[in-house]
Length: 530
Image (tube, rainbow, N blue to C red; front, side):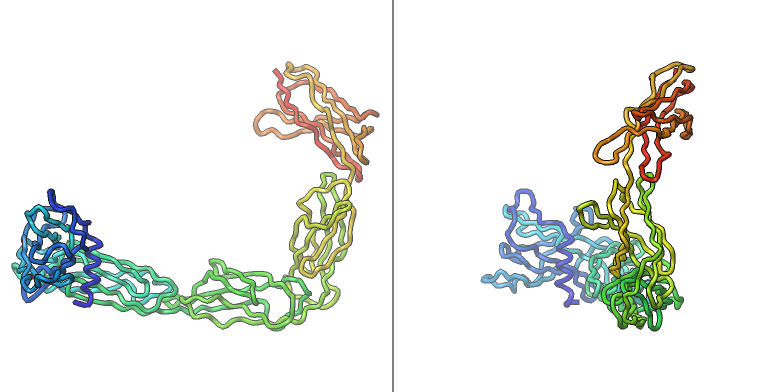
C-alpha cells in the first residue's frame, strides 16, 4: 500500500491532536509534525515512523503507544536502524521502524512521538498516527445500489473488516479502527470507523454531472475498491398542441400543451417536472404530474421547436416541432362598450376576433386598459387576457376621476381601440354625524349633515337628493341595515330623527345618483346608548 502512504499520513495528521509539549519541555521544535503508521510484516505488528524534524534526530525518538481516550502508556518503543542516519544529515523524510509491538488486545491505538525523553528540551508530538493492532486484515465492500442514476443519486457503501488476533490468530471483527476512503467523481473523501461488529457505512450524493465512479477504501496495507456505472434514464415528450402548420394573428398567444415523462429504473413511466424551451427564448416548467401549458407569442413565421432542457441524468427526447404561417395583422376589437359606475369603477366589455383568417382554439392576447388624463399621455392601468372568438368583461384597478380618456389596446398586435371619455361629477357628504352622544334609551337622535357636488372647480350645495341613513348594532355578527332616508334642502343640508334603541354605528350614504354623478359615503359615527 505504499502508493497511499502519503495520503494516509496526511489524513492521520489532520485527525490527530495538535503539537503539545511536555511540562518543562522545549516549547516546540519549529519543525513539521512527524508521521507514524502501522507496518505489518510476517505475523508481527510494527510502528512505522517518518522523520519530519530538523531540530532533533531519529535516534532521539521514542514512540509511546496508548489506547484512544486514555493517556496510560502501554508500550514504549525505540526506532531501529537510526545508526544509518549520518551525523552530517538531519535525515528529513527518512522512514524507520520500531521493534515488534505487543499490546493487550486487537484495536486502534494512538502513537505519540517523544524526542529527547526526560531532557530539559524534550518535545512531545501527540496523536501522530494510529497503530492498528491486528494481523492480515481483510476488507470487503458492497453498495445499496447497482448503479448511479436519477433514482439512485444517494449511494451508501457498507463494508466489513476482519483481522487475526496477534496473540491467538483467531479471525474476528476488527472493531474501533479507522480507514480512509474516497469516491472519485463526487470528490467525496473522509474517514470511517468500524463498529463492534467490524462494520462501517459511508454515503455519497451524486449530481447529474457525475459519471461512473469508484469507491476506494484504504486500511494500512489493505486496499479495496468498488466501481459503479452511471445510468441515464430516457425522457419522453408528448405535445398535444400545436401540431402541423398553425395560422394565427400577429401578436396573439397560441396555447402549447403537453406532458413530460421519464422511464424510471424499475421500467415504469412516471411524470416528470422539468423546464422546457419553446422557440428561441420562451420557457415553461412542467408540473408534478408532468403536464405543461403555456402561451406562445406569434411574431413571425417559421418552424418552432418544443424541447426539454439538457440534463445529464436523462437521454433527451426528440424535439417536437410545428410551423407558424407568416402571421397576418388581423386582430380586432369589436362591440366595445366602456362605462364608469357610480363607485368610480371603469369597465370594458367587448369581443376579440380577427378581420380575416383563423386561429387555433384557445388562442389569447394580452389587452391593456389605458388612461390618458387631460393634457397627459397614455399609460396602462392594468392588463387582462382575452380569448379570440369570445366576449370579455374587464375592469381597471384604477378608479375613474371627473373626466379622463380611456381605451383598450392589444399589447402584442399593437392594435388600439376607440377612445372614450369617462367620468362623473364628484359628490361629498360633509359635516355629518348623529347627536346627541351618550344618550339614554328612548331619547330622540338626529342624523344630519350636508351634500355637495363639484361640477367644475368649486363645491356647491346639492339640493333635492335622497340621502339614506344606515345603522349597524354593536352586538357581534350584526350587519348594516337601512333605517330611513331624507332629502337635501336648497342649501344641501339634510336631517332625520330617530329614537335611540341600542349602541351602534351610524352612517349617511348618497347612493341614489343620476348617471352623471358619483356616489359617496359619510363618516361612521358610534353612539353609546345607556
